Length: 356
Image 1 (cartoon, one colour):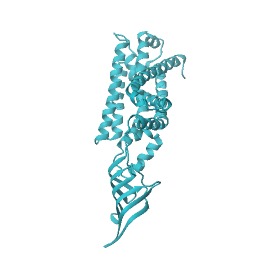
Image 2: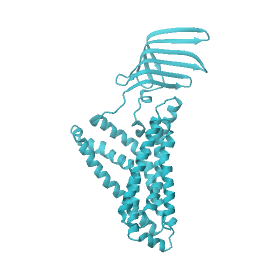
Image 3: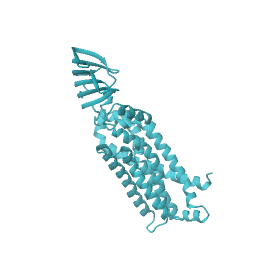
Image 4: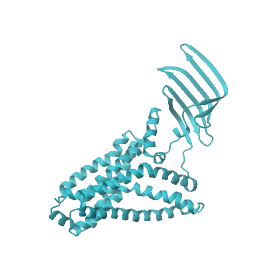
């Protein structure tokens, strides 16, 4: 059961966390305005405030949540240690393990908030923010794809050599139907245009049907057909994963894996990152507490300096491992969890050095 001292620590911890977020986000917004001021000239003020910055702030705050957590723990714990409050708590009979309880409760609150924002709040907010950026700042929408190969359904493989979303048209299209390892039919077309709701129109097409050693041909200039793929299945940008809620992301990965898509690593990384970030709050809170709970020569400045180095190293390490996973053969799950595992060992080591 939580005591008065626990609520005191939780209040100080979360208060410092919120203060750090407000301070750093205020600076980030000023720099962002300065960078995009020329682009904002043609945008209505209402859209700048409500479509962009109202959605930019939670995105940015959550992006650097680990940094804010680390800074908050180190700043306020160093202050407690500097004022000899931690020594007084330990001298009164409170064990160091018991002192960790309010820190872990605070970490659980931050972790729950991070997961909720990541999973359900920020994705729809990102849609509005990125639409604003595409319209007024820089259009990064993917509207072109090459060498698209997808499994439409079990035994049915579709291929598009080149697709232009501005024309809603793919070129050099083919679709093969297999029964076991035997090819039963093949549809080829010079071009194929997407209409709506899986409706496609093939132009200058040829259908070849195979029955044992027999082969029949059918040709035509136009074929209206239903193919259960849509341009959104292969027009994928690195931002798309950030636009999906966690249930949507999980379903999308499952669907694309069944189709044999090869460009879904960013989606795996985003999904694993949302899970890993919830545990990161506990690990970084522990490191911050263990590091700054001892009164050191040089005051809290030393602890804050070490904390900033560790937090930026964590973010850098996460970015590098994710890049290796995206562009190399590293497992997305391993890449995302490596920083947490490494920092868990750092936390265990620092715990052995903490005051008891």
